[in-house]
Amino acid sequence: MKILVTGAAGFIGFHLCVKLLREGHSIVALDNINDYYSQELKFARLKELGIPKDASSEFNSEVKSLVWDMLVFYRLNLEDRERLPEIFRLHDFDQVCNLAAQAGVRYSIDNPQAYIDSNLVGFSNILECCRLFDVKSFVYASSSSVYGQNKKVPFSAEDRVDQPISLYATTKRSNELMAYTYSHLYNIKSTGLRFFTVYGPWGRPDMAMFLFTDAISKGEPIKVFNDGNLERDFTFVDDIINGVAAVVNDKDSEGNENYRIFNIGNSKPVKLLDFIEEIEFQLDKKADKRLMPMQQGDVDKTWANSKPLMDRYGYEPQIDINQGIAKYLKWFKEFYS
Image 1 (cartoon, rainbow, N blue to C red):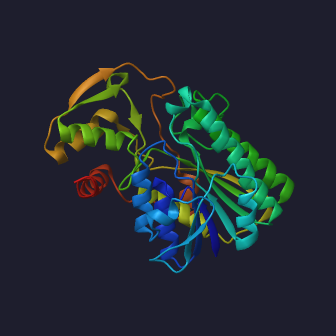
Image 2 (cartoon, one colour):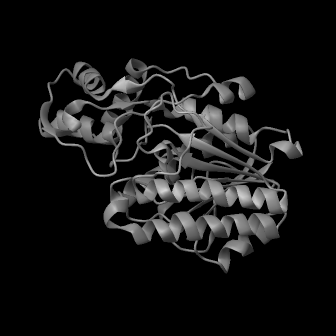
């Protein structure tokens, strides 16, 4: 298949490109390489895909991979209503996998406009291009943040999600509703995947895995919010990518399944203090923990009911926390040495 992957210089998008290329798909990768976090990390991911930094720095030009014959890259904003349709017209996609978004729950509290532009305007532009250019299959990233402060666990895709507590969560729930409307009106098969706390090699530097590892390595204090009374359904990136790829490769196009939402997580929540303790153990260093109150926009616990995805696609997380942290630390030491 010929597949558009947006957010390709991002953490999950990069790994998905590698997976789909290894499966023999033809990939058009797209990213705006914004400066929300280190652009150098994004350019390093692209370099792994064979996309040189000097060429990928230019907006609106096609860059061929030096490693993969079936990969080209564009630096482009999803808000660009002129250039985006041109790429759809040129490439005639079989499928679109939209992982591009302004990330970060807490950043959305102080920078709401960035989320409106990318996560709402950009998302609607992608949907409209799918309609105009007859793309029948659309897979997109949603988030566990849509569950807000839901108390019933594990979280199910059938639960109410009408009380988001961050603008980031609001935009992700809006994406789900927009996708539903396009599926209903234009017969576009859409699948939303609610990701649960993804971690692993090439992870973002604003995420807990990096923040804890970097600070503990340097002997610096770490902030532990809600006095450590948090639980997260930490899910290793390889498990996430295997699940996403299974959905992308789905050949079923039954009309009564045009709109679907799945949770995709490890389904085994871990206490934040236990997570930190495992990092300490593997680094052989103790953390200087600064216990802090709950952050605005944060939630007490995440826990995915991923059974529907398991039943449908055979999705089965393989990497436990001990293994996942070991894999991350190996990459961290090599990349940041």
